[in-house]
Length: 509
Image 1: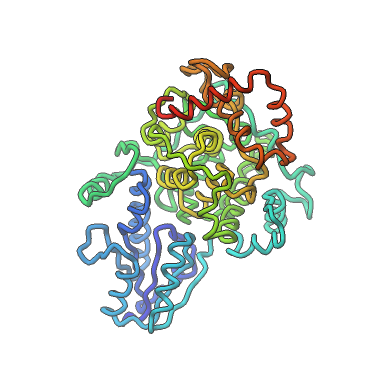
Image 2: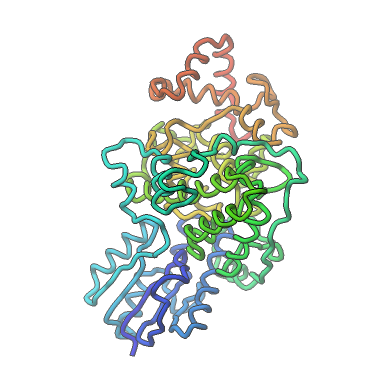
């Protein structure tokens, strides 16, 4: 007789979790496709499909191991589309005496399940997901008493703790960070490698979403859907990354190029954020591959990748649990503008925005510099409300779950947290975008012009941003040079008028 009900959320697909090591006929696992999760923002269609395919694959894997699984599809008449209602119903119908779940990684779900558990008259038990390198509270304790959470300090601690690229207590080669070597523009398209393809039939789920009236954004060409949705595919993609892409990753990780949406990036973020694979196994695999191929792969290539996972990814999760729920309402600059319509269509004369948004709609993907220094940069310069920016990022990207999205968006990208995550706002003029991409060459606007009909909007908006926020930013030691330059500009007023015009006519850019 079943007496234990275990809930598995859609981003808890960790096959290495201790739950699954032993089969127990008294345990019933439940997984659910729910409107609560498809509808809280408008998600990219590929994101919803990828989650549902991955969940179904995981459910079938559990069944093959002999576990008892109840899987509620979106159109199941027994599915109430709410986890609490579904769980309460199952507990009553099946005479459950113990309810167990793994810690959710989103604050709203954590609160929902915590309250539900407290209301139950049966026993409940909560487990760790056994995925991350740190606990929820680790980062808050690490930076106790600090106003700013310096990622580099945390990153070095992770390197030491897990002995990654280390020699005793010191980093290999004596350097912790090779960031200055990771900022090269891609000039030779012959460097690019063919993308790894995982063809699969997603017609059934696409039709399900249409039948149930799920509102999505973006495109889905069924024959081209190529995201890994199970552990085997994810590990194969990890091997492909190491052998084909890692040799150039670090060098070009910040590069943007019109000819390829993915460049040397691993495409492992969805697999990681659904816990199909673990950060430590990814990092250790990359580290081992570098050790075995040091003659052909520089340490900077591997370190740049490893830093993104045990540095930024783990760090951002720590910030999330240290600062939520207040973090979700921070708006340091008091921005109020709406997100321009072209974020949803890609129809803009700004070539960099057209490409970054266009590929996001096409693939549910853009890499970190496109998100930070193109789409995020423009939203910050244009004074868009952080809520608007959050909703867009959370919906459009396949790897976007709130714990990693909101800290990157509201913190790193929009500086809405006033400096918890970043030491300065990440804004730039056309100069940076041109330095890191080939976007400016085919643009309607001219990258060198600050004023005039074809002046690049990033140029005047950049100076307008600093001018209007001087009271908040002038004392920041990292940007003092900006204000010294601004005070000496002879055409300052003309540039600011140009920016005002663009802000008033942002939908026409």
